[in-house]
Image (cartoon, rainbow, N blue to C red; front, side):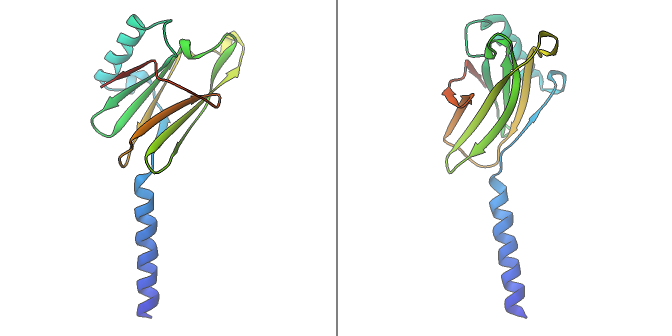
Length: 139
């Protein structure tokens, strides 16, 4: 009986420990972000508009990152599509897609909050399966 209890506790401990390094991403409204994030986005829109990939990341000291996508990310006739995030031992990979839409459906931006648990050495971003780069990084 003790062995079964010990085995159960070990399995629960392993499963709990494995779940600790999970990275989550969720879409948020600009109004619900911090003043620092709003200031970063305002600077991007004033200084970077039309000059980059349209993919920006803001590093928050609380283990959060904010991913901002603007119209520069989109090709003509495209809208914001799916987003997925995957991790491996030392990197976070963000997969972004665009989709065909009509003009009436077009969003002007997307803002995502990424919650990090653990340390990662690399942060990579992919658009429609191809690796690309961030248009700007803020902290």
